[in-house]
Length: 231
Image 1 (cartoon, rainbow, N blue to C red):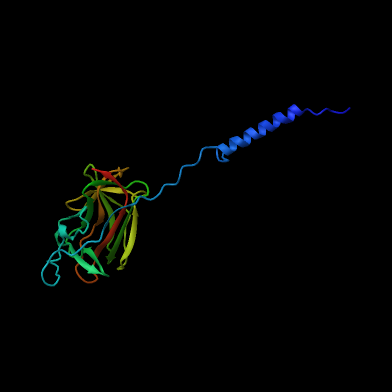
Image 2 (cartoon, rainbow, N blue to C red; image 1 turned 90 degrees about the horizontal axis):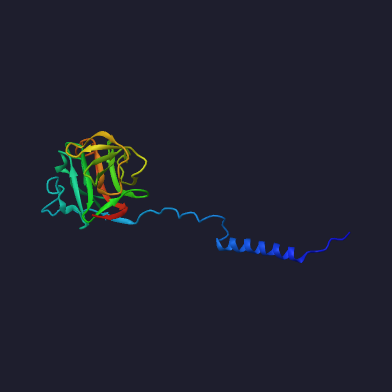
């Protein structure tokens, strides 16, 4: 017994197949919504290369001391902290200007502040800094939050006497409250809000050891990749 073909069944099946193909084309061949684009690093928010302060005669420890004039970027202001911070001085090494902590008689911190904007240090924000440490000196990241709290992170930086460019992410480390007068850390601060940061910088928790190969830190060219948040 022969089965009769049924053209209407073939036509209906073809319509179903065509409809499914059209649906796949309309969604780009995917069965679900497109995945979000990967996060990208923020653009350069600022750069500071420092300069020697105005002076007469040969550079000395006295006439090269830190003043607001060492800041080359007029959008920024630099701040120093610590009872012995007044002797931080500008110096020239490898064709760059840096701030040297060797004569400081206390722990010290150096920070930068954008006069017009807070800094959003969340996500892929990065601080890039050319630094040198000697004689087991260690630097740590420090920020001043929008509410005025100073905190230091536990990511230690040492370079064994070489100028190296280091890069700091603000996630993935522990943070501790910092006394800006005496530059000592106290209690841990959990889940700090990095979406509006007032100042960013580096801190050394040991006094300087003087000239030569004694313990010190040099802070040279600095770049911040972060989103600007108007004040």
